[in-house]
Image 1 (tube, helix red, strand yellow):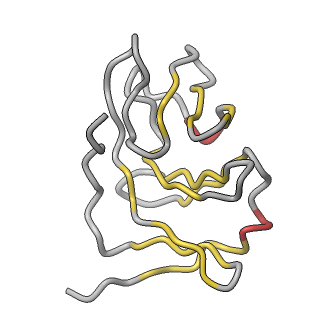
Image 2 (cartoon, one colour):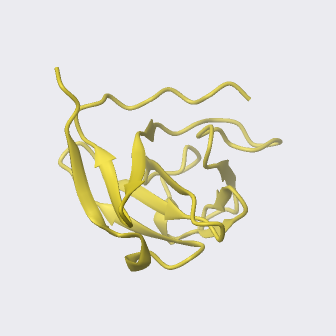
Length: 113
């Protein structure tokens, strides 16, 4: 199956250290922008109690869940110790200032820590 990328919007539509949500029947995906303009896509659901990660605080390449302060690494999708757990990651890229999400790829397993 050929990869299918959808345009989410302009990078400038996502505030630095902020997020946007792509709503899907299978579950929402949070698109994060770091202060350095890196972009990551994770399930919008904390592995602890399902808090909306898109409403968390982005710092460096991690996000803090707004419910219980769990920190999730945006690169790997893994909770940062001492917390444990992980969230699915999705392919995302920036082309000509536009953020694109791959919708044909299955969720990626967390990267090894």
